[in-house]
Amino acid sequence: MPEEDREWAQAVRDCCIRHVYRRRRDAIAQSAYEGYLQSSGGVFDGAPCRPWPNLSRHASEPWRAFADRVDDAPDGESEIETAEAAAREYWDSLYREAPPWDSDPDQTHWLAAVRAARRKALAGEVPPARGR
Image 1 (tube, rainbow, N blue to C red):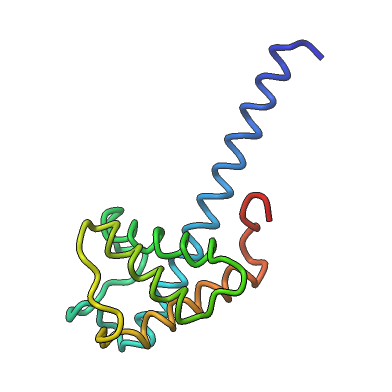
Image 2 (image 1 turned 180 degrees about the vertical axis):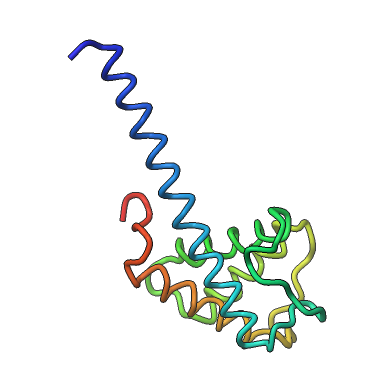
């Protein structure tokens, strides 16, 4: 096979991998968001929330950061530790300080988001993360 064909084939493979990874990341983030809203009665940070498809990229990107942290949680990390770290990632992506975890009234909702994200990641409905 000519070198330029191999290069083209690799470029197409890389593009497909990025697309699949993006779809997986979005699906896990959407599940986390919907899990949080289901737990909180549709309220986040004191305000009613819109459905996932109606969120702007700016509003949905923190949920992708949350989902990334859940998906990359170290083996053996407890669910509560994952929820705390993922919530911190959410707030960090907005350049805002996270509320102190011990006094965060939304701990239950963050846990619901972690559980929803993990269920989606394990359900096989989305392709596995690279290297897993």
